[in-house]
Image 1 (cartoon, rainbow, N blue to C red):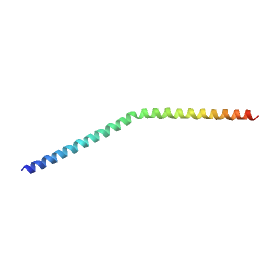
Image 2: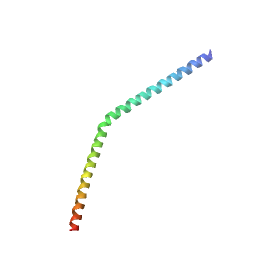
Image 3: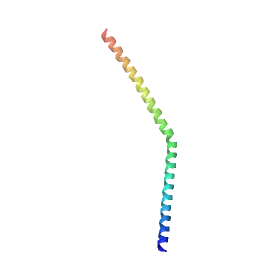
Image 4: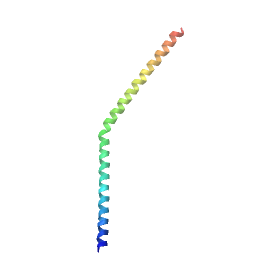
Length: 77
């Protein structure tokens, strides 16, 4: 009789632990997914800022190259 009870307690305990772990995992997944959706606008803002910064740097590099070309033309004259 004691063996049957200990087996039942063991299986109930294992089932409980598995249930808790599955619930915790699903709750964590949903929480992470919601945080990504909320932070998407922040990520997009950072990407836009980065893109504008790159474009401004690219324009500045073109202006510097043009100045170098102009200076080299005047020096060679």
